[in-house]
Structure formats: structure tokens, C-alpha cells
Amino acid sequence: MRLTAVLTPLGWGTLAGAVVLYVAGFALGYPEPVVLATGALLALAAAVAWTAPRPRLEVHREVTPLKVPRGEAAVAVLSVTNLGSRGLSGLRAQDRLGSAEHTVDLPRLPKGAARTVSYPLPTDARGEIPVGPLVLVRADPFGLTRRVREYGRPATLLVRPRTVALPVPPSGKAHHLEGPTSDNAPAGTVTFHTLREYVVGDDLRHVHWRSSARTGTLMVRQLIDASLPTTTVLLDTRGLTEVAVDAAASAAVAAARAGFPVRVLTGDGPLPDPKPDAETVLDRLALVRPGTAGVTEALRMARGGGALVLVTGDPSEVGRAAGVRRRFDRVLCVYTGSGPAPAGPAGVTVVPIAALDELPVAWGAR
Image 1: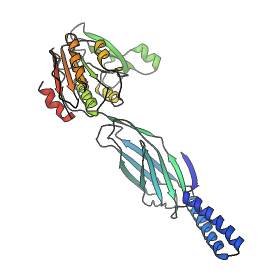
Image 2: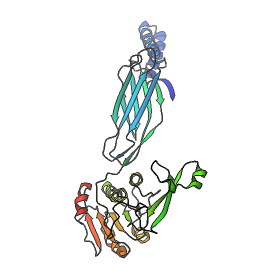
Image 3: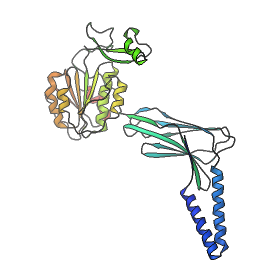
Image 4: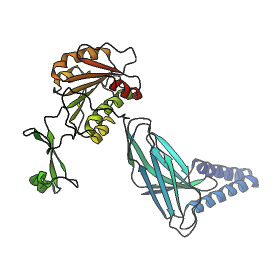
């Protein structure tokens, strides 16, 4: 918490005016400027006396939820409690929301009273939105002085892509209805994928004791069924649009939430920390930014098998997808360009959309 008490620009102007009036009054021998200067100084003294006492406040600001799809509601809930022995008025909360600042005038706080206010957070842009620092400003009625106190730590709101419900991308192979569980997997197809922290309900037979002893945290082996078809989602980030990111997220989340392996790539390579779960996929796609690399190299290097979902607004990339048709069981191209959708080459299914809400119908029709 940081505390400062300062004169406002109006306060500094009043002080400077009082000095000028005093000098002019004494120099010219007129009492009127001296009287005005004395009044200004008395007003400044009253303003300082108003804001000088250090208020005892308990302040808490909570961002809820911390992760939200683009365009959906998120709010900051501010609670202020007066712990002092006297009432407080003239309080104003200032919270920075991204590059903007939000100001809330708080009602008078009697002794021991609490006030709770909420205000919306911007969710129209995908990415990390810093919230804070939060400061409380107490100003005098004349606006000559103010006391500023900073509370708490900044928070971060993560605005994720929007998604729509889709069936698992078809791959041409029969899917295991229960997902990649080791108990139902054919013999020899369960393989080690990664280590993760233990959560309630995990099979203790999968605990990796050596790593647990080294880290001091119970770690378990995450296994996957290698026989399950993998969905590879490739996002073209050149001329990136929100519709393209939303479509890629919808395809990847459909596979991940059904329990099937998923890989998400861009022209610059795979997403960092590529865990095959829906929450991680949404977190990483929230931070994707426009790029300059095409998807030709990514197509060439992508591991085959399962379904490939290419999301692009470039008609030429649709044709290039035919070059990898033999390596995948199914190739779909979600075309988000502004022009007419190109004809798909043999073995490539084109799904043209202009808005995310069109994706479920277009997806199901293919």
C-alpha cells in the first residue's frame, strides 16, 4: 500500500494566486488583494485539514471470473469498509482497466459501515487485460487537496476465444466413446504423455514417486491411448481475425472435451505448453497474435494421422492442403476469408464461414 497527500492543480493555482495577491497588495498599498489572499490561504488550510487524517479502511477488489470468453460479462467487485472512528465522505476509487481508467464515486461511509460496488470489465478484445493498480482518492469539497492510497495488487483478466459446440472432427476411424482411458484402451496402445500434479480421484498406481520426492509435490503419469485418432488444428495467423481464432478454438475444444488427443499449430509452430486439454488450449489461443509466417512449412512438418483442421482466410492455402491429404484420414479447411470460398481439391472438405455462429451448421453439413 502506498500513501500520498498532495495539492491538486487547482490547489497549486490557489496557492500561487494567494502569493501574487499578497505581493500586489503590499506593493500597491491596497488591502483588498491581501484579504483575498488570506481567504485563499484559509481555504487551503481547511482543505489540508480535511484530507490530512489518515483513514482506516479495509479495501478488497475481486475480478470475477478471471477467465471469460470474448464478449461475455466480467466484473470487478469492490468492497470498502470504514474501520475508523469517524465517517468519511469524498472517496473516489480509480481502477486501471487495460489502457483505460474507471472511476467510481463512493457514497459516504459512516463509522463501521461497508460499501460494495461493481463495475464491468472490458471483454471485447481477446488477450490479457491488466486490472489495477487500484487507488482510493479522498478529496476535499473545494478540490484543492487529495489523499491517494494504493491498495492490493494488480490482477489479470484473460479474455479467451469464443467457442461453439461441435462434434468431434471426423477422422475416418472409429472413436472410442469413452475417450482415451487406459482401462478401455487396447493392449499396447497406452503410452506415457507427461507428468502432472496429482488431483483427487487419480489412480495412485500412476504416481511417479521419484519426481514426487524431487519436487515435493505428488506427481502422476498422464497416459494417453496412442490408438485414438489425433485432431490437428492449424491456424493461419496472417491477417488474423477473431472469427478464425474462434473457429480454431471450437474445433480443438470439441476434440479435447471429448477426451481425444489434440494438437494446435500456427505458422510459427505449436502453441507453447501444449497440454491436450480444453482449458490449456483456450488459454494459449487467447494470446495468439497476428503473424507473418504462412502455414506451408507447418503443413509439411505436421505429424499425420487423424483429422487435420486448417483454419485460414487465404484461398491459396486451401489448395496446398491437398498435398498432405494422404498423411491424414480427413482434411477439413475452415475458410474465413472475405471473398468467395474456393473449391476444395480432391480429399479436402471446405467449410466456409463469415461468422462463428455459422460454423455448427456448416460443420455438420460436411
